[in-house]
Image 1: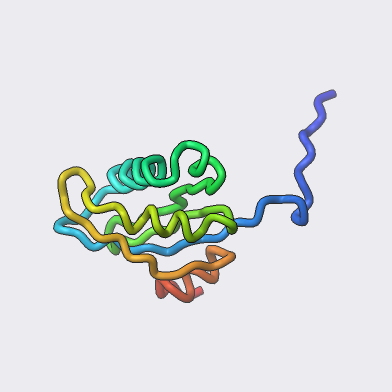
Image 2: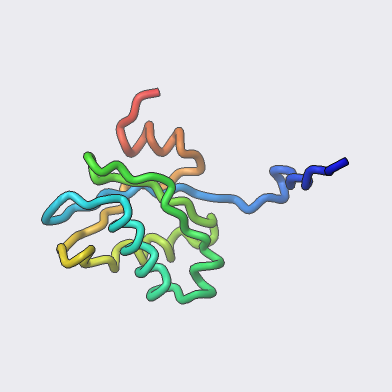
Length: 118
């Protein structure tokens, strides 16, 4: 009989924060282009160990609105925001990435910063 791996109770799990951002650029970007640019910026700015500690992850990116959500460890939110600001080019196109806000849940982030109604 196979046993399931036990999940950690909420009190022992790593706490995460969600960062809403907007890409302002010369053209509309694809999700994969944004993912590669963000990952490159995280590794360049934070280094391998810093990126592993911050645990950034692109949760979603809306290609029409050019907005997205990044998940990160709560202790490293400012470092992730700093790495976002340093992205200047994506696939040869000049861009600016604006942080719209930070929240503890995706639902609250969408409602408050991305204008999604529940």
